[in-house]
Each structure stands twice: as C-alpha cells, then as structure tokens.
Length: 432
Image (tube, rainbow, N blue to C red):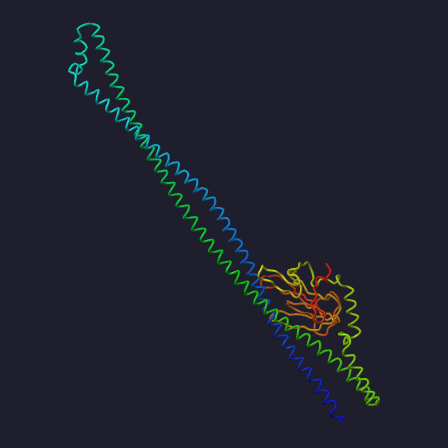
C-alpha cells in the first residue's frame, strides 16, 4: 500500500502539469497571432497615415485648383466683358462706317455734279477763254473769281472725298482688328475653360480614389482590431485560468504537506477532517492568499513607489503610443494595453522594480520578458536579445535585454503592467 501512495501522488500532480503545458502552448499560439495582428495593424496604420497625408495633399490641391478655378472664372468673366465691350465697339464702328460711307457717297455725288456742270458749259471747258471773253472789266473780274472759286470748290470736294475714303478705310481696319481681338479672346476663354475642367476633373478623381482607399484601410484596421480584441480576451481568460490553477496547486501542495505531517505524527482521522475543513474555508479567503510573505512585501513596496518607478528602457525616449484607445481617424480606433516607448539605437529594456523573471518567450523573431513583482507583472516586448532567464531574481533598473528595431528603423519597447489579470496604465506608475 505504501508503494502505491507516491505513484498516486505523482499521477495527481501530473494532470495539472500536462494541462499547464497545453495552456502555455495555447497562450504562445495566441500571443503569436496577436503579434502578427499587431504588426498588421501597425503596417495598416502607417499606410493609413500615408494615405491620409496623400488625401490631405490631394484635397489641398483640389482646394487650390478650386481657388484657381474661381480666379480663372473671374479672368474668363473679364474676358467675356471685354468681348461684350468689343461687340459694342464693333457695332459702333459699323454705324460710324455706314455714316462715313453715306458721307463719301454724298461727296462723290457733289463732285460728279460739279464736273458735269463744268463739262456742260462750253465756256467752262476752257477757263482762260471764259475769262477773256468778258465784255467789260467788272464782268472779267467776276468771271476770274467764279473760275477760282469753282476750282477751289472742286479741289475741296476732292480733298473731302479723299479724307472720307481714308476714314472709311481706317474704320474698316479698326473693325477688322477688333473682330480679330474678339475672336482671340473667345478662343482663350474656351481654352481656359477646357483646361481647368480637365485639371479639376483629374484631381477630383484622384482625391476620390484616395478617400476610397482610406475607407478600405480603415475597414481593414477595424477588422484587425476586432480580432486583436477577441484574442486579448482569450489570453486574459487563459491567464486567469493559469492563476486559478496556480492557486489550486498551491493549496493542493499545502494539503499534501499537512497530510504528510499528520501521517508522521499519527493523528486521528477526526483531527484530519477538522484541519481539512479549515483548509477549505481558507480557500474562499483573500484572492492573494496563495501569495507568499515575500510577494506581499513586494506588493506593498511597489505600491508605495507608484509614480516614481524608473522608465523601462535606457537613454532618451519619447512615448510613441499611450495606454488605452487611440483615435487614428473618426472611424478607426486602436486599443493599446500598455505604453510604447521609443528610444535610440542600442537602447535596452530594464526592470522597473525588484522581482523574479517568470517567463521568457519568443514570438516570431522578437523576444519578450515577464517579471513578477508579487501579484504585479511587468511585460517587456519587442526585444532582439535577452540576458536573463526564467526564475532569475532581478533588481530595479537591472538590464533585461536590447530593444529591436522595427521595419522603419524605430526602437520601440512595448511595455505593460498588470496586477494579476487587471491591466494598469503604466504612465500612472512610471516616473517622469
């Protein structure tokens, strides 16, 4: 009978260990899926930011083109007003030209009439003979004056006729130039309208495509965030299950030791039952009853240093993404369970407080470290190398590993702080 007791105990202990291995495997698989989704979200966020920037540029271009459109429309309207002015000028020139042509016709008629009158008179055909055929000196004088005035009249009529013909020619040339100017202005109006319509149509189409792409990326990011949220929920459930299993294992170990002590001292079955009842009662006590005295001391010390804990990486840094929800756009919201600290090349992760390395695992090409400080757990992700191992005791500011660069060459440490399954905002605990 004594031989079977150790075997029975080993079988009982082997079951939780096997379940723990399966659970750890599931956690690692889910962590791997979460890392892939987070990388996808980060890539999509980068693409989304780039697309947003392009959309903004295109919208600015469209706005600029719309301003140009208004400017060009103003210019076109001024050209159209010029055309209206030129049309009015053309109409006025045509009226003036018609009037001048009528005046020219009148001058021509008078000139022709004077020539006909001169030819009709035999005496006027030869002015000298007409003058010297006078019968008296007064008649001679009158004939000389008449011949002189007739010659002056004919000359004046000729000059007036030439002047009016020149005016007609000038008005015709002015009318032709005005019509040519009006034709060029109309062609410029048509060209400006066609050019502006093409440019505006192209830019609007480009902006519409980018806005469509932005909506598509937002949809993809939202879908990935939903997957990540579901994955985080499953991980939290598994962590809670692991904590519960740890409590049960601790209680089972305590019970086993108590039974061993009772068996050694040869106590009665009644006394054993009483002790067992006391153990069962203790099971429903404080949620951290399974913690050791050292764990409780760590809890108190860490809580006393809230707001003064060291930054979890060395060298200069900036916060790349804060804890909680981040509104990328009005339709895209990312949920960060920790804080992303961005440092420089060579920056290293360091412990924020005394504790024990509870897990060292790798997801993809990156390594991660979990440090337990009693019931508090600090998480350091995105490391390229690690210099600690599971079960190792660490002090505050002890180096854990080197932060890895991402695909853009940025050195970002993803840091989380939890109290059992509760997610805490690290910025409330880390000093400035």
